[in-house]
Image (cartoon, rainbow, N blue to C red; front, side):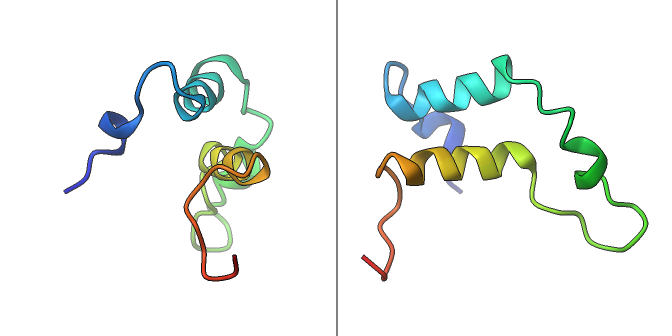
Amino acid sequence: MINYQEQLQPGTFEHAVHYLIEHKLDLSVFHPKYRNDDTGLLAYDPAILLKTAGLKITGIGIPTATR
């Protein structure tokens, strides 16, 4: 099993994005919609979406078949 926390090397851009989102940003504004108990499945965790979008916008990330 891959532990993604261990893959983030200190001093890298990816580590900085992770640290900022996990420790410095207040994501509480997103939690009421994320914790959707009324209509079924949970949405994606807002922190995961921000990390993915941040890396995708900067051009860093997992290559896709569309490239």
